[in-house]
Image 1 (tube, rainbow, N blue to C red):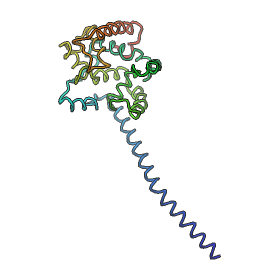
Image 2 (image 1 turned 120 degrees about the vertical axis):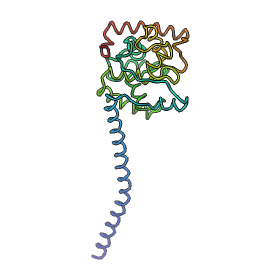
Image 3 (image 1 turned 180 degrees about the vertical axis):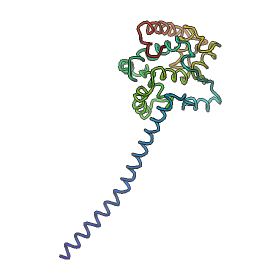
Image 4 (image 1 turned 60 degrees about the horizontal axis):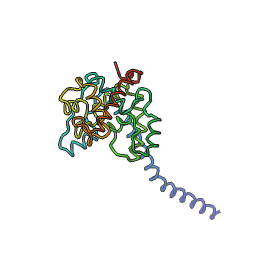
Length: 245
């Protein structure tokens, strides 16, 4: 009888010890879960907010401002930009923009086949990266980009996605958005850009620190001609309908 009681007490004490060991782990798990849910809620709140409110700054703009001392940028709505600029940028960066839900499988496959020498990101993905995340090729950023892009596509219109992109994309070193780029390169507002000027700006976008629309290299000029043809094509075949009035 005494042995049974002692055994029972030992079992209880062992159970309490195991419970004490589990409690810190459970506490940590709860706080990790709360942190993850808090981050998710924060991103969702920002996505909803920026569907109607213009992002005041992005990580890239902030980083360039710290590096250069100042940046050139001014927000303008899409309707105050020459329509040919929007078409040129879409033709250059994401010709299937109106026909996908955030990811372009063909572009991704082409990027893989090219061994990573060309990009496969859509304009929607680039907006997520530019507005909510940071530059670089780290896998955490890519995972977040992949998770957030469908949320942006569901919440924002295609016009809003393109409008934000044309206002936050770097188009020359320290120059962000169509308004600043149009005045820096050509001395006009974005509403006055010609088809050639718009195509030159679009040709600069993948590498704005090494390409120039004001003094275009032979490659940039050739690329701009291709973009101008592409802009006319997507207007004719309906691939610009989702962002045109």
